[in-house]
Amino acid sequence: VHTRPLAAIDEVFREVESGAADFGVVPVENSTEGVINHTLDMFLLSPLKICGEVELRIHHHLLAKDGDRRQLRRIVSHQQSLAQCREWLDSNLPALERVAVSSNAEAARLAAGDAQTAAIAGESAARIYGLQPLASNIEDNPDNTTRFLVIGRMEAKPSGRDKTTLLVSGKNRPGALHRLLAPLARHGINMTRIESRPSRRSRWEYVFFVDIDGHAKDRKLAKALARLEREAAFVRMLGSYPKAVV
Amino acid sequence: VHTRPLAAIDEVFREVESGAADFGVVPVENSTEGVINHTLDMFLLSPLKICGEVELRIHHHLLAKDGDRRQLRRIVSHQQSLAQCREWLDSNLPALERVAVSSNAEAARLAAGDAQTAAIAGESAARIYGLQPLASNIEDNPDNTTRFLVIGRMEAKPSGRDKTTLLVSGKNRPGALHRLLAPLARHGINMTRIESRPSRRSRWEYVFFVDIDGHAKDRKLAKALARLEREAAFVRMLGSYPKAVV
Image (tube, rainbow over the protein chains, first blue to last red):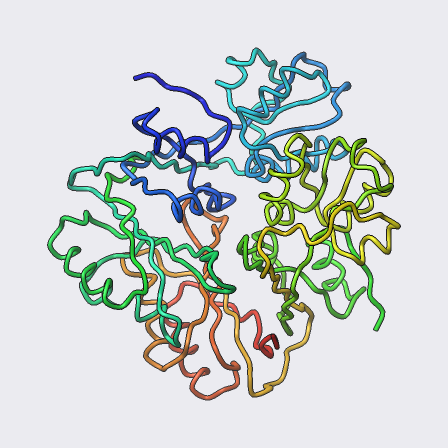
């Protein structure tokens, strides 16, 4: 497999949509900081499917061009990584400005070009950009894990241990949210996750990202989804795919 | 009423908790960019109640110490405001670095001290910090609105047009989420909003912020909540308060 790093989440979607890449890997949720909104919002516009998921234990390191902390003026990283290290930064480098950039790869690239800039990024970024670690494992939560989605243009076959992700919006009326979820419960489908995002169509209107156990080809699940489609204003299957092995 | 601006959301909570202020106003949700995670996460630790909500149409302006765009090197603002103006910035000032700071008030303060820094902030910040508008109403969405919560140490009385916000976590078992919400539906309580955040206790465990119509003193609602308490691992009433008048 050939892998290629890109500077931002929307570029990953674009490369896969255009066919320049077969699959993309994008972060969707961190155990400390919650969902990555940018990734969820991309699915509102993209035709891509979710083909898989991966969970990775995330360690963050403070990386710089050379090993001297005293000349640092600022720390760059993705907004989520800055948040995952907030307490460590508050106690160890409270005076340094924190700058959110589009990705940790981009942060490492910036640090490689400027001795006053340190990046928060992973070990592989240190290797690729020739950076020195000033501090290691600076994430606040010792259990810090990020879940990534594999996105592509094909659908994954049932593996026997699958999950399905739907994008749903309700009709705008009282009780809509419960009515939307009732068909799943009635058919004994376990909903493991619900996340809402602004629909971007009108104010205080939402779409829901719903994760359920099972593959869309399972008979029970197919029935529940057919029922859900009648209740919802809008349903799109984002994909059925094997659950992450932890 | 005496008002006092503070640099960050956690400072607002702290000032009200300590009794230095009677009430605080914190942003909780924007119509384009979604919830403000930092505010929701503060409720996990704070004993404060929600006493009210306010919706404000938000206009963003590009503000600087003097009216010359050419000397600008960077744009500072709260992460949410940068996101609400992303398209405008991408087309008008793509080359300038964007720096996320703790609040728009803090951004305006920084711009007032450095002619190379422009802030994205509101009109009142321009007045307070003596900044010039370089561009006005630069928010991408013409309908851009932010909902704020009023936080305090007292409970609001029923007004006849109230909503109630709960912080709930389910028991860790299949179908927990649906079981949690079922008592509300059974008692005809309209859930208008559900938002999940990491519990910060263990990995992939969530708490839910649930908004429902009505006041906790309403008989029907009190019954449903008593039932919900038996189903949930944890319930905390964040407050019943008059709905925002739009």
